[in-house]
Image 1: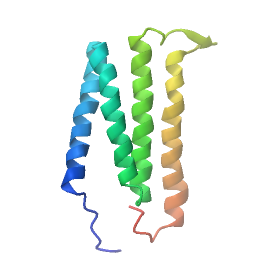
Image 2 (image 1 turned 60 degrees about the horizontal axis):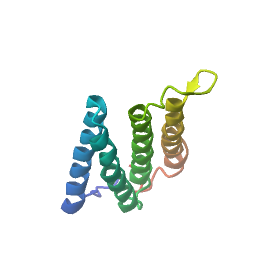
Image 3 (image 1 turned 45 degrees about the vertical axis):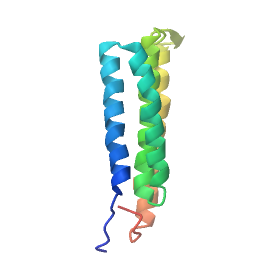
Length: 131
């Protein structure tokens, strides 16, 4: 094992901390049914998540987890909007409603993490890009 340290520059850490603030504001707005604020908070939350994923692209473990977060926020935001705009309970087919479409990005996130843990990590055990 290497003693290499993965350090995050302070300006990146500040952005990540601000990202948490936006994410919490989005979810609090969803809980309290504050539609304008909830919808507005999607944009900074998602944009910062994409920037974080891009900045960590040199480390497979980081980029996979951060892209999974991007699709999680996307799924979560779609679900919130479907409830805010009252189309979440409309039937698509059978017992499935428009809210259930949020499962698509959730599954994409699971597939990305599955790829990392069950394919990439097992084949790159000695790589510094595997954490």
